[in-house]
Length: 370
Ligand code: 8OZ
Image (tube, rainbow, N blue to C red; front, side):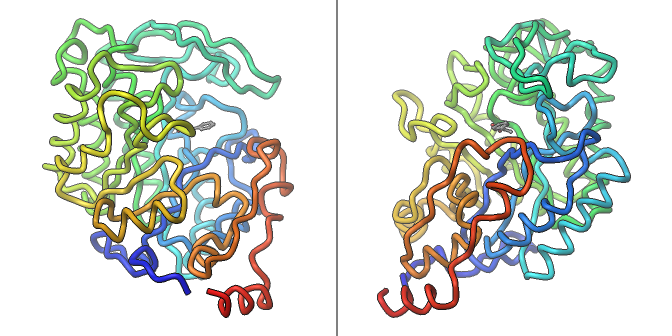
């Protein structure tokens, strides 16, 4: 057996995690056209309940919040009922699960929007990106800038989604404030060109994301609300001219609210962990609660950083796709199965629920060797 604090329980506020390994939110695009999780979702998450905490795939808070084909939602009763089945399965296996609340902002396409409308964003700045639609990848147009008087309605959509998460039996929620989606678009000056009190100064750019955080905290209490940020990631064609200037005060504001955790994509999403410039992991010094590290962690790096006390929780994404029993394998020092990128997005059971866990014989063999 490999020995590390990574495999010891952790009290995430009122939520007791059986270990410090977190399954990252992973978009897999397998829900129905109505954005409802299926039976395969129940099985997929049940298989991965050995994670200390599962964060669900990013989930649309509203029809307007959608930016990719076949992503799930949490705004209809049918979606709530389907997620409840997922949660019951995870809880039967003694797992814990938070839903990730998602609004994509400008990273969408009229084909994915109600009534074929333009996607909405802080400002009408076009991202140089393509959208994943039912009919393939399509060029993303310039979005429509949200009017100031529409913002309370968007906050209300977050509240409704957060309430639905309670009805569905989640253990908590994670607010997606990363990777160039709506909240990140307000924060970073590459997409926010507003001249009202929601743009310009750092204080103004933080205003809308913090209104969302405060509204979701009212529903769940701060100890069951986490947040994900990616201060230096170029994902979805978004950047800030001075990430430190916006993310240090943002994290200080989040810290004041006593959130369950700060989840940081420390480098480039799915890329370089250590790009030149501002070191996103330094934000830990500005947050008094639990720090979750993410970005190309290997088992060795996760153990090292948890054992040294540099991070509290280690988040793994792609390894969980092909290793449903990832925690068990790491504990045994067993090799990890390779993932097949061709089945990341779309399709059904293949590449989703057919990656096997170790057999009883394999577990015994690796257990003796370790
Ligand atoms: C990969 C494909 C589609 C969406 C993110 C929600 O980057 C995503 C995402 C990732 O946060």
